[in-house]
Image (cartoon, rainbow, N blue to C red):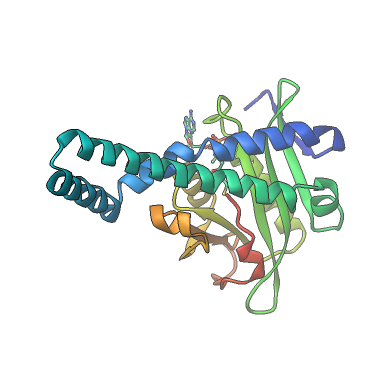
Length: 238
Ligand SMILES: CC(C)(COP(=O)(O)OP(=O)(O)OC[C@H]1O[C@@H](n2cnc3c(N)ncnc32)[C@H](O)[C@@H]1OP(=O)(O)O)[C@@H](O)C(=O)NCCC(=O)NCCS
């Protein structure tokens, strides 16, 4: 972490930031796959397919083939979920990072630089809370594989919390998914609490059991503020 520097985003970072984000999110495909395989319903479904093929086609090989096809389908659902997430992000808020995150007093986008190369990022934007107050939302947290486990995301998270505190924000919210267990652990360690689990609208995510998690922190000084699902929360952070 000593060689890592956190600084504000510059236009010259654009391509690298998109590359790091895209890779970090798409690399979650195996995690989504293994999460799906841990689901009782999916295991049961695969077993039923296996038995049905065995009984109807009377071929062990065909049954195994059916199971392999099912596994490929589950992998494809996970891959498609993360790939389409990146596509949507790149055509919305990360299309023009400068405009989305660097204009306005409460908007920021930071990058983590290691040895002169961008290896991570995080963003923050204002977020309306249910009680009419303004909070902030942490978004686009990512650290490239190979630089993980060095405390870079922790430092990025701290940057956001410090910024929110100086802007007088009483709560910081974020959205992650059930797949992102490393991120969840880090957020909990940084004082976030899970406030809600809910389904994504996407059928493929539902099929393989990827669910969204909303989290919030109150800097340890304010009462816990429950954030309901609203337009800010629908902008998914993974
Ligand atoms: C989640 C993520 C940002 C964490 O980045 P990071 O810089 O590795 O985070 P930190 O080093 O601060 O902490 C990671 C935790 O994993 C542990 N760890 C150790 N070695 C590790 C490794 N090789 N890889 C990942 N984590 C490792 C750390 O010790 C730490 O554990 P703790 O929270 O129990 O103390 C990164 O894994 C990532 O980009 N994931 C994909 C995108 C994503 O999920 N983003 C979150 C959006 S909501």
